[in-house]
Figure 1 (cartoon, one colour):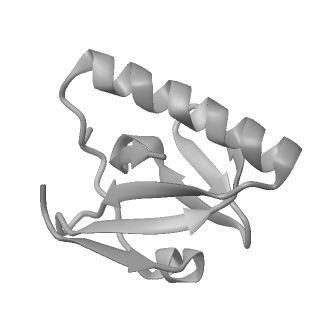
Figure 2 (cartoon, rainbow, N blue to C red):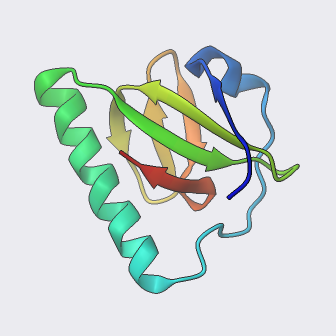
Length: 93
C-alpha cells in the first residue's frame, strides 16, 4: 500500500476525486459498504469517530479521523458539509 497521509476533514474540501473505483474485489466493496453503515450508526448514535482511508485523483492516499453523518448511494457525508465519494474509499475502521 502507498504512504498514507493523515489530514483533517477541513482539508478534504481542497482535494480532487476521480470517478474510478479504487476497490477491484466485489467482496472488498461489500465490506466497505458494511463498514460505512456501521460507521454511520456509530456516528449518529454514539458520536464516535472512525478512520476513513481514501484515494484522490492524483493517486495519493489520505486518512481522516471523523464522524460519519450519512451514507448515500455515491457519497459519505461528514461534518462541515464535507463529502467523500464512496468509490474513493479504501478502508473504514
